[in-house]
Image (cartoon, rainbow over all chains, first blue to last red; front, top):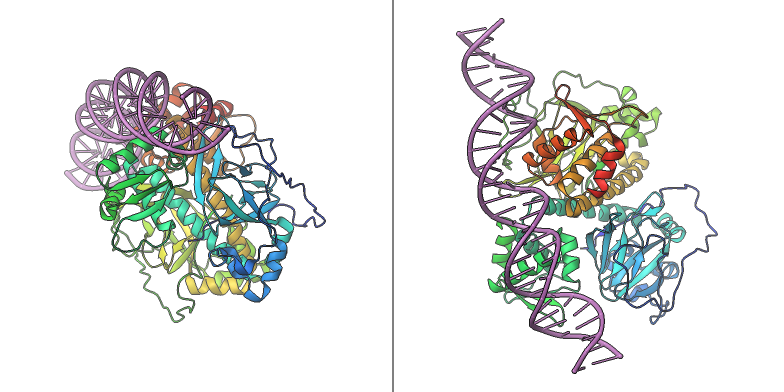
Length: 284
Length: 284
DNA sequence: CGTGCTTTTGAAAATCATCAAGTATAGTGG
DNA sequence: CCACTATACTTGATGATTTTCAAAAGCACG
């Protein structure tokens, strides 16, 4: 369930720069919504940490067992809380910028974020949607390997690189957990490559909906499966290698075939015929 | 340089089944070439270990520093040699079958292998081409996550799961190295997703050739860059999400534009205008 | 009740896939 | 040494899926 997109904590300077107070910028109120599509590579990602007080306790965190934090013994959670800074990111805000220095790592505790890579001319591809428990901050060398942007309201814990390194040194199980999670992430990436390389538009959409259904929790037997879809059609397209219009058309088709039903508020779809969708996901 | 596609040594039964003599089948001579396209999921992968004697020493291995074996101190290489079984795989032979029990892990010491995932209806996607130093055997649970097939003559070292686990226990740096390599693999996978999701056929081909040029060693300054291409056009298509005919046409186009030249023997291309190819890889 | 954004639908265009055929290369056996 | 076969590669013609361009419809917000 918990996927990672983790991090190169050890890469780069072997000698950790300790007194690293950090250039992380904390902004009270970000420019509302408007983010240019073409990533402003120069912008330092503003981190918002309003509303929720930082003193939220790890002991109460419902994301704990789904995340890397699970590797910290319950008796030591105070250590973890001390190292983490809780923040809330408003929808649309980019909190990791590909190519920027990787100073921080994040664990999502609520909401959904999209992880994306951008081509020089502005085309972009969403490599995954991160949810509760996911660990973010994969870096190549000292730079983030991808950008991350809040889809809906996101709550997360921020760990500075030195503090995370320290935690891992103190709790070696964290390293094993990161490796495990990374392996899983790699398997998912390979499956996504299979989808992008082989599948038709309808197969992609069907696979995506089933994947979301799985991520949304164990599908209860019987009735229609309810699947939240906080991301836009454009996001879905960027994730599946399709244009927004194609996503729309395929959803319309599935709706007309009675396989799914859609709701605007909350943004979601209901899978009315799981078997049919599975058939479509595999054989078009 | 060394990529991994590594593997869930710890996943599954925590209790390692020690006296696991192993069902690994060793065949002196495999059926020549002919492998059905649709993977026979039932077949146990035959491992061929002819010609080269198993007593090849790790001390002499030119792949050592590019691989996970680099984590074993030079003074302890005898331990490593004792754990490894050297084998040679003839072109076309599948030595890892997706879905089969993951009993062994492999380090390539020579040649090129293709790692692929197959859809129930036979469509397949090559997730990567593995070369010297690469570590193979990524598993989900106890089953291999992908198949692997020799492209040209492949030499590799085979480690049984228990023996590798033991090595890692004895040389903890191996675990760190595996993590590092896996991170790198994940970054590459994300870049491939970007390619598959966004790029046009010509951009894909150009990117691929540049990638191969990089894998083939640091391009020397000046003259045309020589890039070995041991895989078939069909393989390239399966890797790039294109059909074989499209691969051909794009290569022809690049040739006619004077950007590359091709040779049949040895199978390779020469990049005559690196800058032009880079332009094509980014902006079509 | 406009304004702005996302979603949806339609029609035309384009890229890439499919179908088909022909060429080249290597290996085999007469 | 040369047919003969098998495989890989190449090219052409056609077609289909998906993209692009365009516009309208549905909602949210002030």
